[in-house]
Image (cartoon, rainbow, N blue to C red):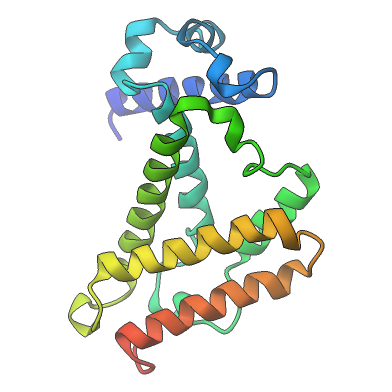
Length: 196
């Protein structure tokens, strides 16, 4: 990574941290660009250089979270392992400790809600597709990878949302295992059982 990339990453990190801090104080639609730039100690033009609409800061925060959530799924063996990835279990454990339901906050996203949900789901599918392409041979799949990735993305987002709204008191390891088993079933259907 060159010096310019390091500076850009540091700037983006400052912007994301500023937005996260401000979201603990007020609702997302009430946060101004001026408040983000002030808290992040950056100029307005710098913010727009990295994040043309303010909503893209929140999308990038989710992208970072997804990259971490799927970091353990880098090989066919990890996708098809009988146990869920430890990052998924840790995600649920951290979420339970925080006690916050991000999906109940969706009404606080204002007019950006549809854009955010669509963009976040696209980012999740893109990360999953990248991981699948690294782990499996695209020629072995009977289902195109973008469709397989979107299906896994929908599975994850739907079940994680269900966990936040209905099943938070359930056993975390069992819930993560169920998500992983359904993911494995999708992969087995697309690629075959002998792909590991």
